Picture 1 (cartoon, rainbow, N blue to C red):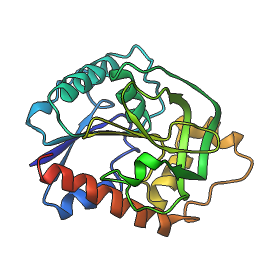
Picture 2: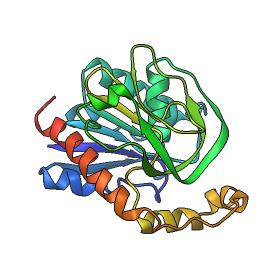
Picture 3: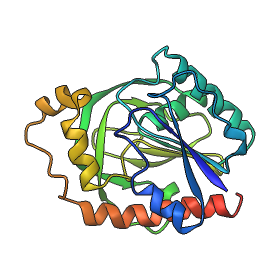
Length: 230
């Protein structure tokens, strides 16, 4: 059993999702658009699909962006478990017919998210404390797809997390990050313009223990859904 992860840049990998999958005996296999933009990954053999972040837009006319949206549409129709992170959540929203557009402000760094009433009943987010301080790095957002349930919001971004049906989740913020990942992101040329705009430097360790605890809960639950064949 394996999860197929769509990675768009080498520095945005599964992070804290990987140990949750490993603990359930689920292999993590990457499909890397930055290495082969023409790859045709065999998503149908995967027990679940994971779509990671990246500095590009879900609105870009890049071939791999169009291909991943088509894969998402097919996977949703097949009832395959899907998790989208940041760009991945925006791709999922587009596959569900929702609009992706510029957020009023860029959310970069540590900031709280608040769970909705729907999240209290959700298989992944039920029982979590509110608010939780998590890590953000995005300039775009999305409308809530028709029929989806909004699970989280922040002070500057209304749609932070949603569930569509019983097995498709989009998370705008990054619950998967480690301090090493955050430090690496801050050094990347692709992120240099964002870093220069920050009023104060990001402390990668500021809420590392809290996000590790949160990630262990949420991603173990997601891995459990996959292991149970939901």
